Image 1 (cartoon, rainbow, N blue to C red):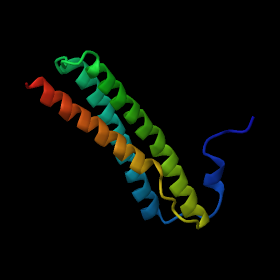
Image 2: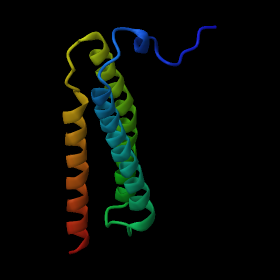
Image 3: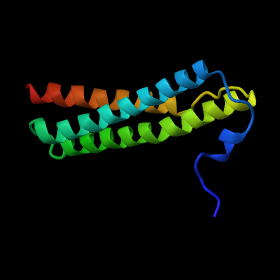
Image 4: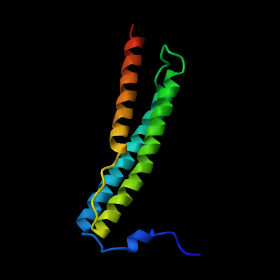
Length: 122
């Protein structure tokens, strides 16, 4: 049975300049930290924030934050691998379509939280 790690593409092309590989890794770790922060925010929202006037809103927001955190963690690896592969083969770095989607989803969750907090203050 052929081993699956490291991935086959890590044996392709040329070894990139270590500075670029380390920068790519730092970006990967930043994405992981952001995903972890979203997951922690999800737990904090559900466990520590008093219920909103709208029944179930806290749970829905917590689930949305958890899903965004999981997406962030999954996309972190695919983005890191794509950048690493491009550096090894001399290809172009691709623009991740997921960035505007994640930004919009986070802005939407933030707006929902603002509205729910404003309604709770009345």
